[in-house]
Every structure is written in structure tokens, then in C-alpha cells.
Image 1 (cartoon, rainbow, N blue to C red):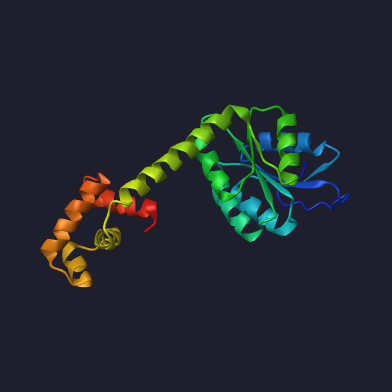
Image 2 (cartoon, helix red, strand yellow):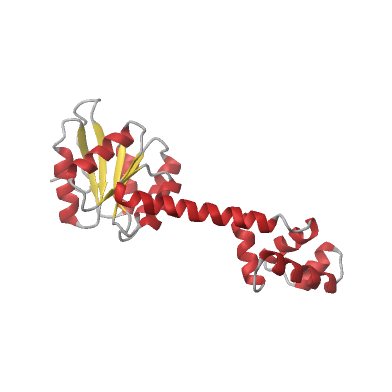
Length: 227
């Protein structure tokens, strides 16, 4: 059994070096054993949480991180974000559950390329490790449609937001930007050198054009369109 901090010597340069991060010890050890039995894969370390996984990856520089998402101390998403910013070459395979498509979608945005269900047979996980090590991607079919739907939903919302945003005048966009900064009508008036009554009119027009009920919704809209 590999300890959480063991650093075995790499046997051959052809082997794919993997760190396994999973908070359930039995699952972690079983995965490590099954994966390590492959002639082209070497499990160089195990981690019970994202924090340990990040430390191991910084130290061992593996080719692939196989990680759960929900773990104590530091979750898998945070670990992926840190590692992909520090070690862009590291490839990530996410262990997930069927109804966790939202987290898988977030992992995709952070740079993970492989996604396998926890209940998948070992050969599926091994195939994902090999695929990402080659620079490819592997998404389990049972969650592919969910992730695609999530991409479509977010893309559709972004397109709708931009259509609404396009209706605003340049002055209204300036006012919306200041609303997003939490400024009052009086502060906006002072910054733009216009009357407070004029600001109120602009705010009313903004809420109507963006289909927002209040300033808070307008501010959230501004964050979504990144103005």
C-alpha cells in the first residue's frame, strides 16, 4: 500500500505517473491497486483530500491526477484550479457521480479532460487516464448529455443577456456599471455630472430593458456580462 506521502522511484520513462485523490480510504486503495496493475501506469501517490493532492503533485510532478470532487479540507475543484495554474501540463481525470453534472461542468472549465463515474469498471478509469495522458478527452456517456445540456443552457443565457445588453445606450451602460459597483443614485449623478433625477430615469430604463425587477438583479446581470 502506498502511503499518502510516498515517492517511489519511477521504473520506466514510458509509464504514466498518476496521483489518486479520494477521501474514502478503501476506494482510494482499491483504485490505486487496480490502476497500478497496468503495465503502462504507475501510481506514485495517494491523497485523502485536495490539499494533500496538491502537495503531492507539486512534489512528484505526475502526468495525471485522478481526483474525486467532494473531499474534506480542500475539494477537487480547488485542487484542479491550483494545479492547472501552477502545472499546466498535468492532466486531470475526475471521479464523479451521475447527478453531479454541475461540478463536472465546472471541472471542465478549470481544465479537467477526463470524467468517469465512480461505479464505472476499472477499465473505464484506466482508459480515461490513458486518453488524457495522450492529450485527448474522455467523457462518460451517461453524463455527457447532462454536461452538453449545461453548456447549452449557459451559452443560451449568455446570448440572451447580450441581446438585452445591446439595447442599452452608452450612458445606460455607464450607469449599469456604477450600479454594479454598489453606488447610489446620488453617487452616480456626482460621478457622471448629471442630475439625480436623470439617473433615476436611466435606472428605470435599464431595469425595463434588462427585464430586471430591482437594482440587485441589474448588478448581477452586469456581473454576468462582465462589464
